[in-house]
Amino acid sequence: MLENKTIVLGITGGIAAYKAADIASKLTQAGARVDVIMTESATRFIAPLTFRNLTGRPVITSMWELNSEFSVEHIALAEAADIVAIVPATANVIAKIAGGIADDMLTCTVLATLAPVLLAPAMNVNMFENSVTQDNLAKLRARGFAIVEPAYGRLASGKIGLGRLAESEIIISGIRQVLGRSGDLAGKHIVVTAGGTQEPLDPVRHISNRSSGKMGYSVAEAACDRGAIVTLVTAPVSLPEPIGMEIIHVRTANEMKDAVIKATASTDALIMTAAVADYQPKDIAVNKIKKTTDSLILELIKTPDILSEVKGNFLRIGFAAESENVVDNARQKLVKKQLDMIVANDITSTDSGFDVDTNRVTLIDHDGKVENLPLLTKREVADRIMGKLIKLFAR
Ligand code: CTP
Picture 1 (cartoon, rainbow, N blue to C red):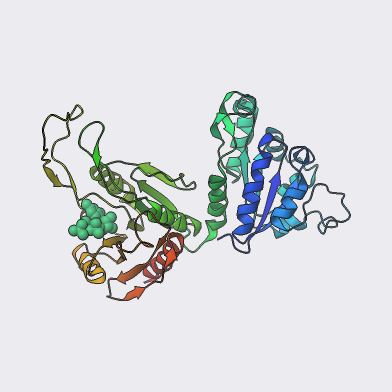
Picture 2 (cartoon, rainbow, N blue to C red):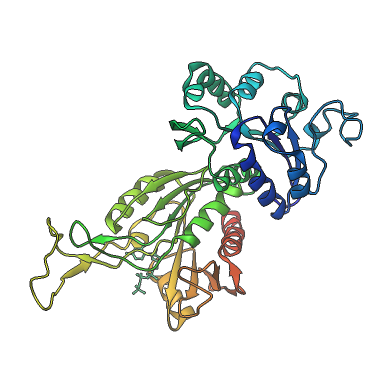
């Protein structure tokens, strides 16, 4: 998604300017061409040399630098950009952009570009909550600017409130999502489930499984990057929340089923990556179960099989985590649950399956076609699944 994209990274004068270095570095490592434009006040917070070294590209700090390759044509970057991202965006630059002011290289570029513009505001809480700033942001949102909301937390002033720059991962996923708007899944609505459901025994304990949610989150992000409108129904995981998609948090299999039914009311595909618990405790104790006996027998009852029960006019893709006869078992599930495709993986191998970043899977479609993929990152697996999904849609 980011490879060979021209990303104009605008940096304005706020204490969070140093955090933009991490973003410039990560975008460059992902293969993007990152051209940094700094406002005069940004250079007071962090040196242009930092960005020059991180991006390997000249950094623009003024419209009047004769040694800049962009100085002659001050809108050259505006034309080259696939996206302009301003990180951090101060109240001042937000106001200038909302008002059409173009008095430095960054605001000129924003006014001249036809590329999408993303703003990641960061400022003092009072400045952020001031109705002028809020009105300006609303105006820009209505004009199609993407805004990555600031986080709540401790600010440079010592105050606690809204105004901290969003985490790098969140800003980068925002950039990816904006770049993906014209992707090959644009206009499709895809529901993805992720994580392992938790079935409570009492107020403090539950039965669950080892799913980290990484595969499901990668699938949701891959779909989003290709322009799909994604609803992610997720069981509890400890991963950063991806942005650019609707996220529905659930805990149990029953909650997941309800959320999936609602989300699939108008969807083009359902991808059940979640590790849904097959059984739940028959009774949930109101109070914490005490250690009063030497042994304890739990009675479990079946949870709903979401994938078998939720059907409709949309493609259905399942996952099969198997420890033996991987392809045969997965194929049986494909037939039994009447799926369009199933993604089978062998959970006994250490570099594949639970909790690791890589996976080795086999894709089996309803025509019986079997495709063995090599060991890939979960994100690469997700991209291959998207490739297959596009073919299924075309059919
Ligand atoms: N699944 C589901 N609801 C369940 C159990 C599983 O929707 N209660 C979905 C999973 O999300 C997955 C697919 O069905 O996409 C296969 O899940 P898996 O756990 O491999 O198979 P099960 O049907 O549970 O069969 P078994 O546990 O006996 O292997």
